[in-house]
Image (cartoon, rainbow, N blue to C red; front, side, top):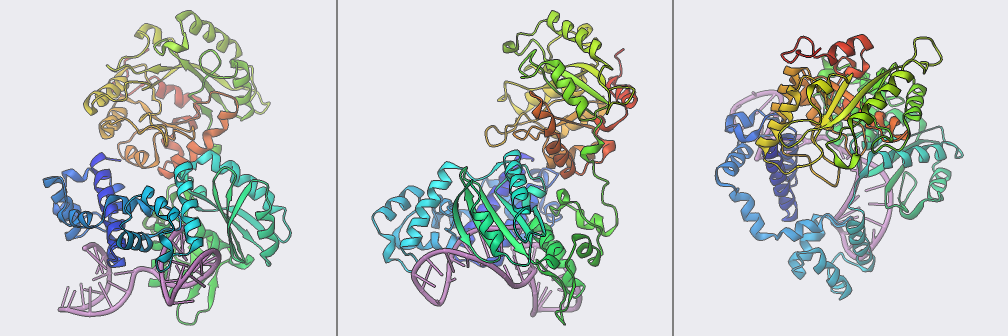
Length: 586
DNA sequence: GGTTGCTCAACCTGCCTTGTAATCAAGGC
């Protein structure tokens, strides 16, 4: 995301919160929330736009456009400052506590002057809340509990953690009495990079046995709410899980509804309304007669709205409705399209498994080719030398062809490569004559993350211009929840990649997912190619490519965009950087 | 406050589920 867009999005979101806390018009708050999302996801830098240009962003009208330009002119927005003066920042933070919304936060501030989480905890212990209207002993307990959760878990978990739990839940509930169908929905089904809570959906005639089976699972530590339609629990690891039981004939409508996203659902709902229909989790109905039209499958629901079935990874209101109406949805890349993995490690450097084991596991996955790319010598802790790298190459050449592809002839081909370190100047580990011996090179940033934007941009562009660098590994170097991405002019990097025939990685490791979906969308417009790689450091990691494929789908990639879906011959041509202005090797 | 259909007004997805005490707030997609 462009940094200035991020700033403006945060400012507008804050304004929306302040409006709801001060009891302003609900619609007004919603409009600012919507504009914040639209600007956050906008492809161009909003700092470069004037009022007219800003108004072309959907959801941004004259008033918001003027506030944005005011922000870039003065560094602040007077309307926001006025509300900030009324409501201390800490009050807004109170609403992050589960079960405590804007109304209660406002009451706490107005009546007791509470403006921070610490003050709130103190007030609860002093039993000051009891005199307030709407606050009872249970509310006090819930607030303390909510604060604890807020401070321990921090909310969202990584995709792989959520997926492991969800798949187990689905397996368990599928075996329960009366379960007709069971799957996970929500942001997990859309393969978002982090998951706030897991939504599990079951089709059954009677809900009670399912709810019971659910709450009795061994890793359920707390039942937050239990009803006939919905039960919410928290697991021993602090994850929130909702189970919803729906009637089997409403399965499609419910799945569509609970998969979201909210923004996507708003759009589908609008489509329904315009056609005199009403869409809810119970089905698609005639608005006048109330007669149910369809609800059993997602395909039927979408079809009746005039849409093809939309893959969950696209359901973010990023143009998928419009594309669907024109019947121009992309043919998304699938995991089965991957013919190989181009970024993996062995125990020669920081991997856990020896070469033979990694290669055997790759062959097991049915790959047509597989690249071994251990770290070069510039990451000092890896203790790499020319001799060790060349010895590995010899070993790779010997194994090449020894592993069959599903037992068929013409076995999996092995590529010998390296993951080079892009140093602060944009140079990499070895001189060109040594690099020429590799089949491919991934180059990545591993240190000096705090250089200036100009330095970082130049650094990566120089790496792209190296005729032996084929893939930029985890391009922003972010670690989700731990380290933000480097401050780099991605548009300049994308242009350099397109110009030099350098692919960008979609690193599939769940704590990286780098590039991220939004940036993939932008890069694609520059004509960049991608490599969806596991960056596996162990046999188990090879399977992480599923998250990379999900992320690539969220970036609207088809298989032609991804070099490791190509045939070996086409891939090798790309690796030689032929036909680009860096096609000087070989 | 923005958008839509049509010049100013109507509409905004819209309803469900749950818990708690307050006759409503919070949270969900």
